[in-house]
Length: 278
Length: 66
Image 1 (cartoon, each protein chain N blue to C red):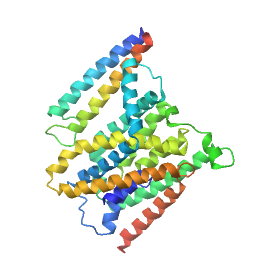
Image 2 (image 1 turned 180 degrees about the vertical axis):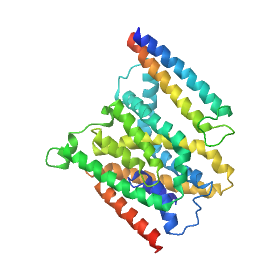
Image 3 (image 1 turned 120 degrees about the horizontal axis):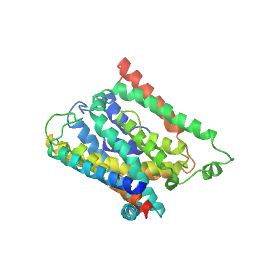
Image 4 (image 1 turned 90 degrees about the vertical axis):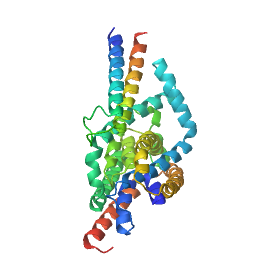
């Protein structure tokens, strides 16, 4: 479960959707209605957030330092300072929507049908993002096409807020946080690789914050904490490898393969669940 | 002048957010929560973040007057 979550969290394929769908299809003994299920998932997310902190440790030092410098000065003078403020602006909509919509969205978590359905929607979104992106691309090779677009630091504050708000969609099982934020970054004019970097940086405080707040609930619920922590470590390792792979892939790669995968996996999941074939 | 007023307004908003965060943290405030008793740390953290954002925005507004 840890490996599954860590590997699927950063790929634009919805880790939550897979975490709800796969145990149901494989008849794993997870009770998705159990009060400890969500805190368990959050603990796995903490593993992912730790992996992202390790991967971007140098950048996070610059971002945190830039945040305090710019906040005190009241001006942004460097790319790190601008990126810090962009991340703050992008994090707020997700945090507000997450806190106030969470209880309503939780009620959807327990249904693998819902997860499979939204997985199809997620796939269509990925394909849609690339269709829109292709209309703005010029040049022959992928390198030429990508070179026309910007770095994460150049995204507008309005776009950062919109991309941040898109993160709230990921509370729906089946909708990928990284998918919608990478797609949002593409629409805002970022290169694929930079959209992925902005997505990963934006995800870190939200995942970390949600994880730390949920942690006491996990320890209250009387679960095997050591096993869960081991799963979180595995999740972190898988997430680190996934992030390295994706950053390399998005130098010239697109969201299309993940879109088709989500549509296929979602439809297959719906069929298997509906006909009771699994 | 306009930026000074904005900076003061944002500073006051930040203080209001801190108070709301404290009220959620001690369990006094129960508005827009899923349970009706006990502290609500998620809400408290959210309003603390909003307070930080307000103070940062106030700092940026203040610097425009200089």
